[in-house]
Length: 259
Length: 294
Image (cartoon, rainbow over all chains, first blue to last red; front, side, top):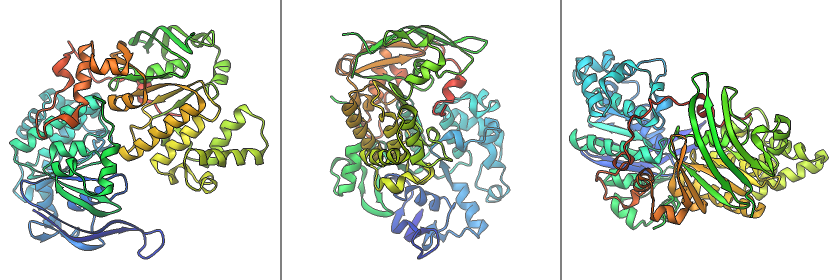
């Protein structure tokens, strides 16, 4: 699906003192059906990596290939193909959903894109699709006529997931999908993502600073620190037997209930 | 032992429709005690905090008493209340970016807290600001005092807030989700700093969070809030091992993500406690306003 090949992303003027290397020589393969977790703290480069996968940004050096084709932000056809099959869920549904649009418009917006429709890969009947995805994420059909502010945080994240599902994607990129939610709501959204990934055979790329969340949803994990991969392996192994000191410190920082 | 703060039958209504957001909330905080207040968004945790400090929006109606130092805070004139705030009763908000003034250098904001209650000279104040920023573990405190809030990381901003909140040796610090906007690693550091600072000042805290694991780490006692009512309270260990209310049982079950089998269906609060009819997600305006510096 994705090949990330020696990718470096530098922000700021190159070679200047203020330049920040968000990603430093990262190489990674994502295969169909993978459930990959990317973990690291703020500034480790995890969001930059996901933005590159989503075609929202271009690498400074190296390249990202999607189904064998090099991602180039100037090539609208590859991008359209990418957007028809790769969808994203962001951290905070309060800022990722347009407050002036009704839920129905928000969810079907990707289906109205001319470029996406030209790919022939997306559902053509927005009305039917809207009803389907709202049902899949557990929202009533009446939700379509309401505005995002009329919903709770967990429900808003369901709306964001419904929108991502609308074009019938193969890959779901989720950037901290539960970290803006209450712990009590977190379980519901995690259950929803688990169910959707299983029933729709989605490839999942999940970014989180919480290894417990990653272990629950993913089978593979990549640990990023200062833009470099410091550890990777099966989610369970990294969670149970972390090798890198950084991974250990991440795990130790997660607050846990005493027994 | 007399309680530091005694809240008795605190009720809050909002607006003309008088929606009832706090229902006969009663609890006490002993001197130096760390009390957690847990509940989900919209349960009334932040309204409780704002009500104690007289910071509720003007469309709020309150009833009941909040006794501190022999006086009822709810009946206190704003001028006297203002004197207590920032001195004996302080608050740490969730979002440090909104709690700090974005147009003012960090050092000046800390200096304001000193000058509010102390007639120190400019030079003296500056030295104390730099010393204080160093105490809360900020690197290069002299340089940082000259920086604007947006130049700091989230964790650094929250350190500045803690520096200000615990500067004047308060008796009670109300922390409203102080680490929710932070990463786990930074959260761990800020919680350690909070623990250190509270101990150093001998201050009590009312610690508000939706995360039971964080509350268990910080507090001795915990209160569970549901739809504006405290449905359970007790020592943290007791509540965790023998939760009486089904809602509390649900909260504890959802917080045990580390014990779940990966990919399995996680327990949710609804499995334990089904609400008859959840009020539509209408959150009163005062809750949405939390974090706004006033």
